[in-house]
Image (cartoon, rainbow, N blue to C red; front, side, top):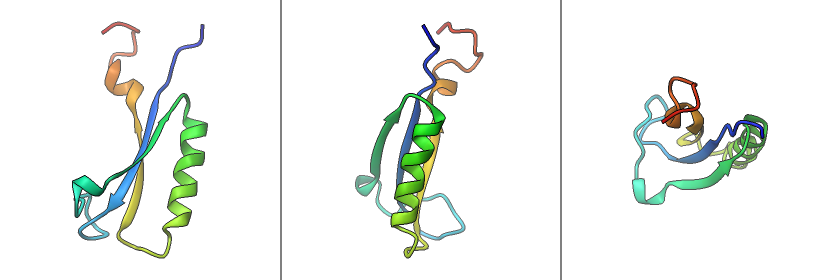
Length: 76
């Protein structure tokens, strides 16, 4: 069985384009959780391109597998 490398894609409108403070946490767009970086990047790219006209809108990829297993040893 291959190791799961989960990735979260989410975004929202920032207070300023130079910062990572969201205007409204209740309005965050949770795109989804993906089984690998390639599929997460595809979803991220689609959302980023769809909102390119809004300089305050930003999407991110979070490497959930690094948060769940920071040592990379497969143990919690």
